[in-house]
Image (cartoon, rainbow, N blue to C red; front, side):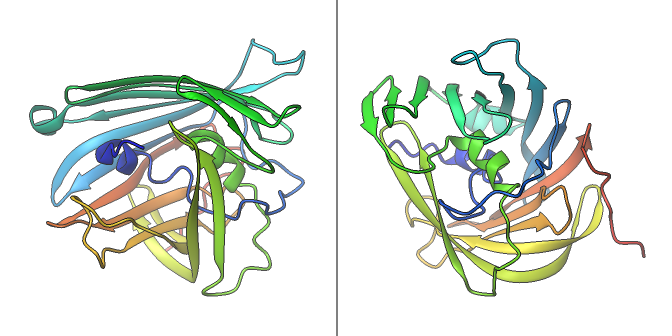
Length: 258
């Protein structure tokens, strides 16, 4: 799997929340028309922006309706000179089960370009991508569908230090990420201060992460379950993902009143 680090950090809030076979709540917490915007900061500088939109799709899969989720992730300012990123991702999901039918991505990262189209055949338990076919069982997601499914997982039984797994398909196969639940905490983002659930996904050390680097992710402790902030330590400095805009939400945001 190619290591496209900045794109990973741009979408760090997407597929990293709950367990692979965890049960979904009855009520879906989001709706068509939702739009969420994040900014990625390196120190005092804005490095990039990611926008995620949800809409009803005119396209059907096996005669069934679908929701389309579309994300754009772009570098900003002087970071375009250092390592320009222009990425687009989309997924079509079942509006009831939230499992993906089809996923595609178009990535332009520096001099690297990559396109992929991924079909999830749940009758045959086969994923078909540009790189080949891959068998799977149970719940397997892509970046975007993982995020939206995760927001709907029943977390009422979670205890501090519980470890959860999420399986997702990326480019060359099905991968598993382990996440540790760290409890509740108030956190400030671009839209105010929120009561949040705190998680720590695992990190693979390499050119950009230290051996002991930590990644923290905060999710609103309300009906929306929106990631509002992520913080990851790098070999030099750190990156912060911050929620800066949210509209079309099914439930009103409820920041802490000071």
